[in-house]
Amino acid sequence: MDGWLKEVERRPVLSVFCSSLTFMLLHTLLKVLPRPHAVNRDPWKSYKWKNLSVSLVHSLLTGPWAIFCVFQYPLIVYDLHSSFTPVSYLLVVVSTGYFIHDARDIIFSGYARESWEFLLHHVMVIWTFLYAVLTRRYVAGAVVALFVEVNSVFLHSRLMLKMAEVQKDSLLYKLNKFLNVTTYIGFRLAAQFYLTGYIIFNYSWLDHAGYFLASMMLMNIMILIYFYRLLRADFFSKQSQSNGIRKFAQD
Image 1: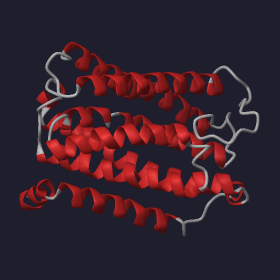
Image 2 (image 1 turned 135 degrees about the vertical axis):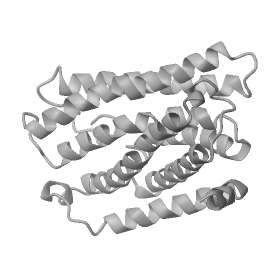
Image 3 (image 1 turned 180 degrees about the vertical axis):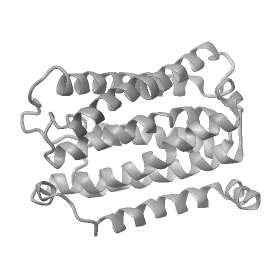
Image 4 (image 1 turned 120 degrees about the vertical axis):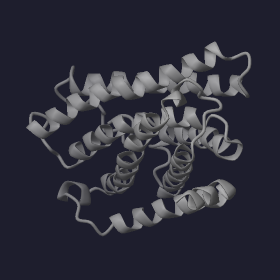
């Protein structure tokens, strides 16, 4: 195992490429799985379902993995710049490969305009994660950033339940709704604001602090807007107000 991890560290670009190829293969394999009739009859929903299926697998894998990395080496949360463990490094490599795959999928899907907000997010994540992979700096920061994937499990599930036309008053939807908002606050908002605070308080000595702070501020604005949309759709509105606009973030 140690030898394999060292090989990943020795060939980071190849490792990221292999990760991206694996998620691409997973995307192909998931196409053969049955989908709800409500999804199959709509090309936009069909694309979203396939895309979200891969995203859900990524979240189920990397969310618990990120938590394990912190349990394995708790000091990782205090030194987001220099803390490094092989398991954490592998996590960032795997996740970088996923985001590259997903960006490629969005670009070549024909629905890039509808998903431009996610594409912008992915570009920022890919750049920062690649920096961590190639320099071995901010690996711990990337691990903390991946705490958001715990929430993404329920966020992706919510969208898939909606596409499958599961009723909002069903027990399954209600349970996922409350887990989604709870983990959004506890894992997504908390992780983002912790990262932002770390950069601000250590701005004077961090590498490329200006770029990372600007990226974090932009992502903070995005996740607060999504949180508002989520609360409005699931807690303060009887019916989604999408007005027929096909957008990932609007759902």
